Image (cartoon, rainbow, N blue to C red; front, side, top):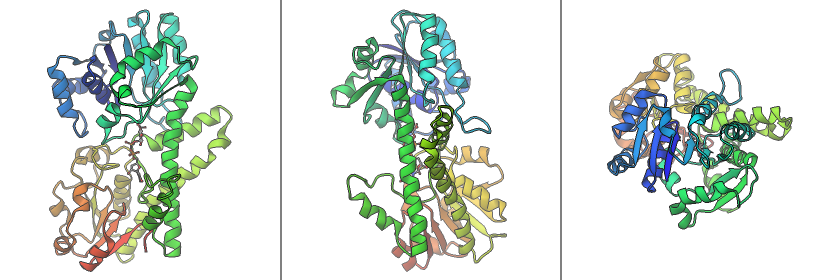
Length: 437
Ligand code: UGA
């Protein structure tokens, strides 16, 4: 099928490449000419494992192109809206400027029978509003909400082999003409057994925000347990293993640590609360305020613990932070708890050096006042304390014996509870985890 993908950021670039991989003819459209130049040269403008190889592979087939010209959408039967919905400046709600602009720019190029498919995370009610615009322009075109559930670092696999597809159509009916078209687009993953649900617009929009809210709640739940474990002298990692064995609970997303960050979970729970307020249902989501508060408390707790590790004062102490990205296998530093902790420590008088395999350029743009060192060995040398804040594999594999000799003081705070505490202590380290004795 001929497809246009509007917005070539994280979601759109991955979606465009994956749709071409599935055999469709795809044009990716974005207003950012730098991004389009990079993608046209099969270079990913951000780090995502496997994306550059995939871009190269599909561009060789001639099925994938990129442009800044929105008229390139003409002739495609399906138009995916993949632009960002960041948090509004100074408010909790989502900023819909880009979604609105992408839809309006597309309108003149719609032909009868076309589908406009929203993938961005939006407040409930957005699809119904945009559907009116689409139908006013082209009575025989349809707007569908088809939320995306990909995780950064696993984006290709999550797009090509998702857990489920959700199609939100205006009447919520399986017989809606959009259903057959989307089934054709996703025929490969559907034929390998991926379930798909047809819902109305509002349910599809809510599925996405509810899923992210549940994930955020799970993380904050275990972080609240970590607070309790610290108070009681218990071990949250064992607690998570034990409760996670109940398959009604499940072990995934029960890793206590410095909390969640990134461009999705934090802003999505806030936008969800804001939207519930507009709908007069704010009480239903007041618990998310607590989820957010628990999450932010993790950052303060790490600063306090680091002060303890540094014998009560951060002034002039040399601290090395391992990891700047909000999670491993990503160079994304949006609302990264690691970077926010690094900046807090620096504000409180420490001299902070941050290292990360992929995210240093983005981190330096966000917090130019911190020191950055790509080489882990150099970053660690002469340090008073080491903070492991993003659990890249190479940090999990560090040798505590080799490393101990290079620090001024062998203190380590394991912000992700991924190191073997006994092994590090045996190598002479003063090891602190979060929610562990
Ligand atoms: C999240 C969701 O997982 C995706 O399903 C969703 O599609 C995406 O948002 C989105 O809305 O686009 P992502 O932001 O890539 O994906 O990252 P996650 O893997 O969910 O991790 C979020 C944060 O939670 C990270 O900072 C991670 O370190 C933290 N986390 C995760 C924990 O602190 N503990 C855990 O047990 C798991």
